[in-house]
View 1 (cartoon, rainbow over the protein chains, first blue to last red):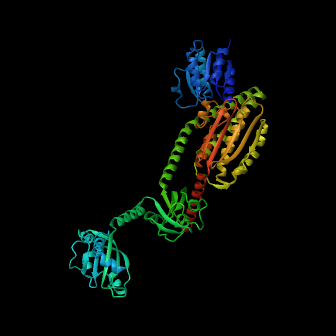
View 2: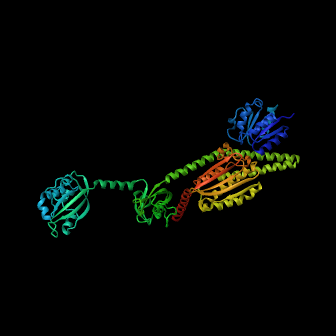
View 3: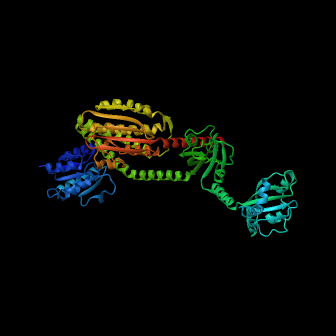
Length: 117
Length: 499
């Protein structure tokens, strides 16, 4: 069974891009455009991994990360932060990886692969 | 009758004269034709010291010969009484200022003047007061002039003369502003009319050609109730304050630009990623000869290219700090222009756009380009808010009004509205609720323009019901800015003419 990845980003184009990229690699994906919806989606979709943008309207990525990190069901789910804001590595603790926008495709896929195997 | 009284009360008469001579609140001296003091009262002695056997000029002024233009001499010649202001030296060697009344003493009417009586009174204190007031008037650190009903300057203090030149007899508007006619917002005219104190901010030109910002207070000279014949114009120079104010605004702008650069990088990174995504998806489409993917990728490229364009445009307009260039414009006409511009765009997304114009608004000095930018920002936000809301009947109204000395524009929509969290952030750089569609600079730019006009922007919003943005401009500030603009133009013109 293919692994499931939840993509959280407020930019439709970036969601589409990541969806296409990850589906091409054989992952199953779901998307959310803000942190609140992301949390609902996570409960319903049970992702194996989450990619997260940090700066979004409604619940920010940082708040989402804090919540999901504390959640007993998702506390262990690896999160890859994909963000363009400076100092992003300080904003949250212990993400699996932090990736700058625009992302390095090969590096992202590599990171995901090693996290899920 | 006189015979009776003389015979009856010779003693009383004598006491009376002696009492009068001693107790009258004057320094009294009797002088003969050779300037000898033949008698003087105790007041005199106390004031000027011993006088017996001395000439009056020696006692009064410590001179060795009669004063130039001696009034006593004249009275001896023509028998007319005289009054004059004199300065001398008192018995302690202090400078003495006194008023002297000189009257002739004759044996009988028509006889020659044998003696004169000099009655003097000390006015040192009055003189001192006068000098103090004069000093105060001259040295007080503001400009003071007194003008008559023809706006001619009849008095001007030292500070004023130093800044604006020696100007007595010239008209105040010419001196202050190099104008040929009365200033349009003249507070002195109001004071002449109603006898009340008025204040306004003005911009003038110093004698060297530099600009002077000042706060002018006009008050009537004279007693209450009388017709105002003269007005005191008192102004405080606030050029330095203005300069500081400008520097603060500039510093704020620069720091905002600095913060903005960080945000700008974020926006650009998102766009770059969108472009990369577009390329990736198009590449996939090419590989699989999938037309749908090709279109999706192309759309992404197009969208992100457009985003770059609008980001750059908004950023430039935000970063560009300038003083508004004020012209006399009709706010209502400006609104109609915006309605024309946005009617079709609004209709496309099912939003009705209407104007609610107050005819009292008339004509005011505004920067038409700046206000145009403000209104387009507010109106496009309002249309977006309607488009994003569940409400199917989107309505946006642009209203004008003239109230309490201010002109305002109000843009109201019945769109999504904002919660307090969003309301708090609307004026932060790069904050947007429109995802990739917004640049997060529109309201900031709007606020900057409004501030540069001396106005303010307010927002009222209820989540789920709609939002109302109001920008309002106090007319007095606009008039001042307009004058400043004008003064700057005159200055530029003068500099040009000189070179």
